[in-house]
Image (tube, rainbow, N blue to C red; front, side):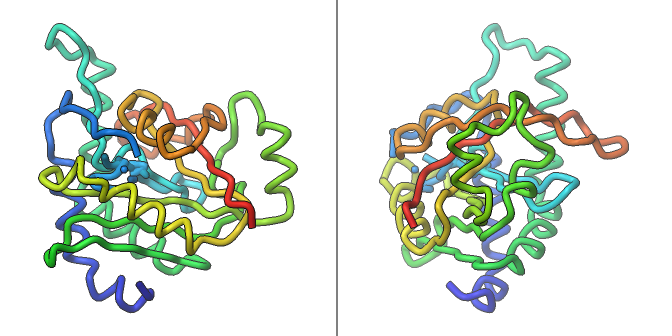
Length: 243
């Protein structure tokens, strides 16, 4: 899908995104190989990532599958702690329609932007990403430093950032997320694909692991915006592209 085509469908894509993130906590995770696709992980990602989710950090457009249609599991006992309440508030802010449209407008203008949609014929899922410098993708950096093999691989070449992978709840568990992600990465350039997941979202992590991604490391927290809810801990996941 070209940038122009993506822009023409931005409202429909935003509708799908908001619907995909509206499912209740604790929903069953999709089967392995979805940002982000069938509700793909995005990273919800994620079936369905924040591939992804995703919210760009203050320092630049970050990848974002948090698990995007992958449901986050609730805490046992039914009582939410203050930490859980803060995560819920952050999720509402991050996954709102206006926040998504703001991110999408920024992402669609990034280098090597690529987007894949799934329709039946109505829109049921999408995945997109772009090329980015690794310092922007992993802003503000890794808690334990960038792994040596990743450092060498990405030192002088940009990575492909999976920004969103999302599938409607009614269409998950059908392999849509997997196909979306496979087709997107087949068109991606660079030595490595990367995604950022919420560290507290096991379904998204399970989905990405089943797709052949590996956990690269825990990320430092981004500087909080004034009056913003506390963001969940984040971790980077990656998959070699071999090109």
